[in-house]
Amino acid sequence: MKPKILVTNDDGVHAPGLHKLAAALKPLGDVVVIAPDRERSAASHALTLHKPLRVDKLKPKVSCVNGTPSDCVNLGVMTKLAGGRPALIVAGVNQGENLGDDVTYSGTVSAAIEGTLLGIPSMAISLVGDGKKGLEAACRIAAKLAELILEYGLPHDTLLNVNVPDLPVARIRGARITTLGRRVFDEHSIIEKVDPRGKRYYWIGGNRDAWRERTDTDHQAVEQGIISITPLHLDLTNYRVFDQLRGWEALLKL
Image 1 (tube, rainbow, N blue to C red):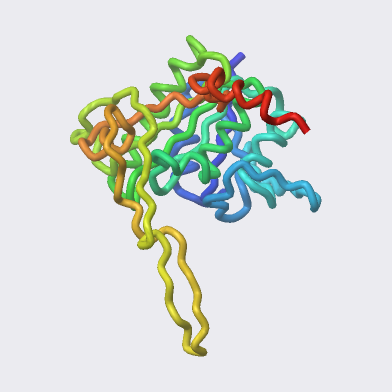
Image 2 (image 1 turned 90 degrees about the horizontal axis):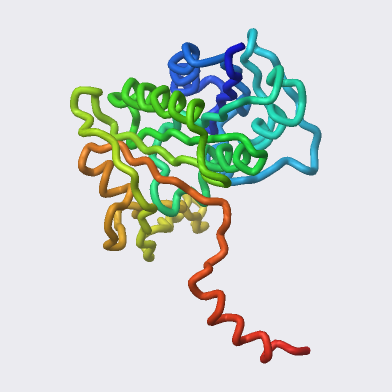
C-alpha cells in the first residue's frame, strides 16, 4: 500500500504551486490535497475556534476548508477527510520566501509545525521571489526530500523548512543545511501614508532585505543560488540560560 501524503499551503487551494507540488509527489504515494479556500498568508499557527469549519470537495482527493493551514492539517489528520493517517505532510509550494524570522508568521511553515505536533514527519517548501522560474526546482527538491523522509523519517519534534531560489533547475547550485537568519527591522519596516481624506494608514513589511551577520544562514544560501534546508525544532526552551535564570527563583516569592 502506498504511503498517504497530505499536501496543503497558505496561498489557497487554487494556487499553481500547490497542484504542481501534488503532481510531483504522486509517484511516491497516495496524495491528498486539503488547503484553505482562499489565501491565508501570514496566518501563522492560528486555529479556528470560534466558528464552524466547512469542507468543500472540489474533485477526488482535493478539498478546501474555510480556515487556516493549521486547520487543514488538523482536519486531515484527526478526521477521515484524508482517508487515513498521513505518513508525510508537505506544505507549499509557497509563493514567496520563508526565511529567518518569517517562520514565526508563515502559514506554510505553521502547517508543517502542526503536522509535527501531531507526530507526522512534515516539511514546508517556499519559493523565493515571484516564483516564475524556480517552481520546477522547488517541486524536484520536494520530491527528493519526501523520498528520503519516507525512507528514513525525521528526528523527533523536527520539521524541515526549505527555501528555493527562483532560478531554473540548471542554475541551482545544490542544497545546503542551514540555520535561520535574523532580519533587521527598523522604522522603514512600516510604511506610513495618508489617504485622500487625510487619515493615516500603515503597511507592515516595508524594508525586509536587511539581515544580521551570521554564518550558514538560509538567506545566505538562497542569495548564492543554493537551496536552503533548515531543520526546525519544536522545543523553544533556551537551555543555555536555564541555570542562569534559575537564580531568579528565590527573588520571585510572592
